[in-house]
Amino acid sequence: MSNEQTKTDVILIGAGIMSATLGSLLKELVPDWKITVFERRATAGEESSNEWNNAGTGHSSLCELNYTVEKPDGSIDISKAIKVNEEFQVSRQFWSYLVDSNVIRNPRDFIVPVPHMSFVKGEQDVTFLRKRYEALVDNPLFQGMEYSEDPEKLAEWIPLMMKDRTLDKPIAATRIESGTDVNFGALTRILFDQLKSKDVDIKFNHQVDDIKRTGDGSWELKVRDVDSGTAQRHTAKFVFIGGGGGSLHLLQKSGIPEGKGIGGFPVSGLFMVCQKPDVVAQHKAKVYGQAAVGAPPMSVPHLDTRVIDNKESLFFGPFAGFSPKFLKFGSMFDLITSVKPHNLVNMIAAGVKNVSLTTYLIKQVMLSKDQRMEELREFVPNANSEDWNLLVAGQRVQIIKETAAGKGTLQFGTEVISAADGSIAALLGASPGASTAVSVMLEVIKKCFPQHIKAWEPKIKEMIPSYGVSLLKNPELIRDNHTSTSRSLGLSESLPSTDSAPNGIINNEVLI
Image 1 (tube, rainbow, N blue to C red):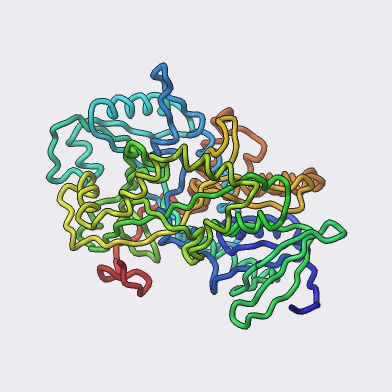
Image 2 (image 1 turned 180 degrees about the vertical axis):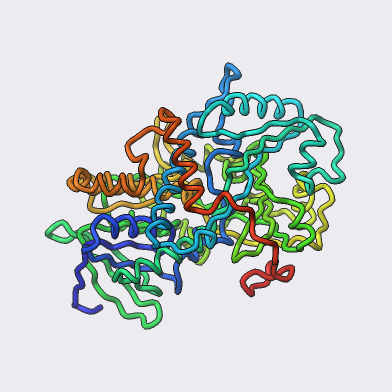
């Protein structure tokens, strides 16, 4: 390893949407800070942020039934739905600021309007959806939501799903036109291109192998050039670990007490993808259903319109799978090497508590294409197997830690772990992740740079007008925000015309 030591102000590990967002925020707040990015892959956004590795849903709780829970008294708890929606509005504001500032030239490269819908079958789920609608419809964050149990109305909204459907049980759906499809891979690449133009040093094909404290409280990283194998030392006053599933290993290597006891459980995802133009043209929505009993929240079935490179396709899934890898391009030893003496009890407890989840994952892994097609036909009754191909999506690592619920609690969501002095922070977890990236990175900034917040606040409010304000308590601000961001992001316009790639081909790669 070279004895030369390169110093910088900020190091970002991982070239995904989180690092892209944090880097963009910091460059707006303190343009003169020196920032270095290390990414083990050859380009930005190749892992969880990649457009083929997630459903691209701009998560705003418009359709995700698992964000609204029925309480024992029968009422619907909408608190999480409100929180996620407000966080997505923050993302929209920041993206709009970047468009208005000409940092992003064409918002259609990463975001397009796609209606968000919930669809259920059976009396019990129809009753739940009706109560959910009644709990949300008068909330200003969910303005414009429609509800129907009428098959003819549903045939107008979702013709592909209603064609040849046997109506032997009640059905219902909600619909809201202000939903979006977001290409987080494209957004990530756009932001990194801008960061590069602002003298951010982005080093692709560079793997961070180790991280440790120095005598002056800074952090020293051992970074290896993947191509040459040579290693160098880099130091920084602040380090952000945004390496997706790979963040856990680096958090453990940092040795900060806040990272003790935390483990991770990897869950892989698969989608059925259709790119046949005459099929794709019949469906213009993201439609979420109810998760199967015993399924994790991230496995809520949904049929999504996706717009990638101006081409429309349909995604159905996700089907859960299991791999011990923490990253799609990771190692088969990721899971076992993440088990340490300090998290062993939590890992064992999680295994005992989640036998049903393990059973569910095993069953999902064993599904044949015919069995997956049968699940798809619950959404698209006349789906033809020849029109759909299997796509392996990204890896997600769910957090395992001790909570008020006991040891070995499996957490679904996104969490920031930071040192007490704010010198290092790591992002762990999964969905709604990318959709709430701006809120999450503002949390990192608030935790890690408290001495600067007062001075930075005017600029933050310029970028995000609702910063520090509850949108829910300010309906007028919600309306103004929705109008202005829709205009800046071009969301009042219709979808681009369908021009799909040949069936089975995505980015010149043949689907499984």
